[in-house]
Image (tube, rainbow, N blue to C red):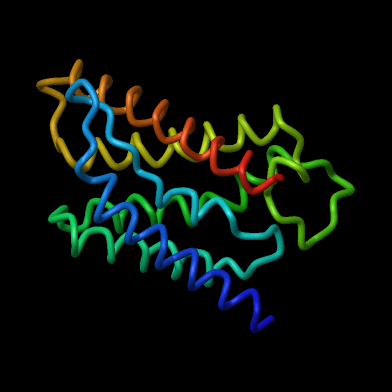
Amino acid sequence: MKIEAIRHLSTFVVLCLVQVLVLNHVNLFGCATPLLYVYFIMLFRRGFPQWAVILWSFLIGLCTDVFSNTPGVAAASATMLGLLQPYLLNMFILRDSPDDLAPTMRSLGTARYVYYTLSCVLVFNIMFFTLESFNFFNWLQWAKNIGGSTALTVILILAIENVRKK
C-alpha cells in the first residue's frame, strides 16, 4: 500500500511539472494544447475509493490552476472526471475482471484502452474548454480546441502507455 501511495505521489508530481513547465507552452495551430495530467486520473484502479479519486483529481487540477493562471477551470474539470472515472472504466472492462484491475493497455486490451482514453479525455476537454470560454459566441473555436486538444492528448497518453507496456 505504501508503494502504491509513493507511486501515485511521484506520478502526480511528474505530470504536474511536465504540464506546467512544458505542455502549457505548446499550442499547435492555435487550438491544440495537450492536457496530459488527465492521464493521472485515468490511472486509478477499479476498487480505489471514490472519495480518494475525487480528492486526488481535485488536487492535480488545483496545482495546475495555480501555476497555469486558469482560476478553477482545471480543478473543476479534473474533479468532474474524477467523479466519472470509475463509471467510465466500468464501461470498458469485462464483468469478471478483478476488483483491483489497473486500467492499462495490457489489462484492457488495445481497443478498449483507446476507447477508455478517448472517452475520459473528451469528457475532460468538453468541461475544460466550456468553462474556459464560458460562452458559445465563438463555438467554432471552442470545437477546434476540444478536437485538437483531445487528439493531441490521446496521442501522448497512448505513446506513454506503449512505452510503459514494454
